[in-house]
Image (cartoon, rainbow, N blue to C red; front, side, top):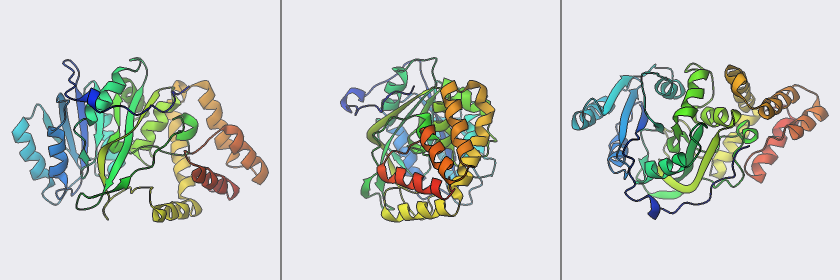
Length: 326
């Protein structure tokens, strides 16, 4: 079973925390990100945990992004900053191409977007959680975010989720952005087994789903560690505003969520032999019930135990089940 959501962690205990023999690989994916990239790179430099290496994969930028990365590489050297050409198939394929590359080795792996700003203790907080978890077990650290606008002005916080992270939640919801996630090597190994070519909606939801499926630990930090920039070019936006709720409801009604469920369920076949038996049973019941008539469909959904983190989210889940939209 997954542990309960972690309690708030004091920032003071993480100040100047260092790990002599442990490294974190920052996996940065870029595409025409020159406008905000310098602030993100500067936030890497400000980390209290300084034993990081940067692997940047650019997906064909036509602005000054690669030049900015090259300048950063000159500053820190090729041994610490590596720049790659991405696969050119979108952000999910780009992130997974980095994460699943066996030639890229580290103790821990941190996803990074190009337009955010990390808190100076982000990596230190993540490392503290990861080191205190059992090493043979896959572990993912993730957190809330501060929401900022184009000008860097704070406009709110991402939702605070209080329910326990679990496979039954991961089947129908992603609880944290990839821009906050840091994985240990064991979690990465399971994602490598699934492969970089899986057809999934997002790399962060996939990481949560896979880690939960095999009985790993999800450390959800309620303290924000990333300034998440909201602007018109965001690939994935916040789910905080009323407008975003309406957009997501429309996506469910149009069948987009059902398509995402299909993609995730089919991709889980690649790691089925690693999944806990109770999670296999929940998956089978959830998937089978999606194709039944109205009453058995709703009953099957309830029996599978899947849930979202909020009351409104669970109402939407039930609504989706009634109209065969999940």
